[in-house]
Image (cartoon, rainbow, N blue to C red):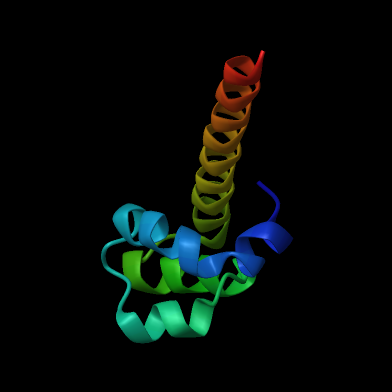
Length: 81
């Protein structure tokens, strides 16, 4: 999933992000608003990890979203046939 799409559909994805990073506050989520650099910064701050690790986590999360989206799309296509 690319970050433009995540940012554009932030309300849809925010719940999944909250499950992943429970230490982030409601204020944090408002600041993040789907922006990757903001998410990485807040992960660093709340979890006390290096920027590279926070970046890796954010990328892995986006990849999971992309894989889930592809699986749903594949299933929809197979039911149409």
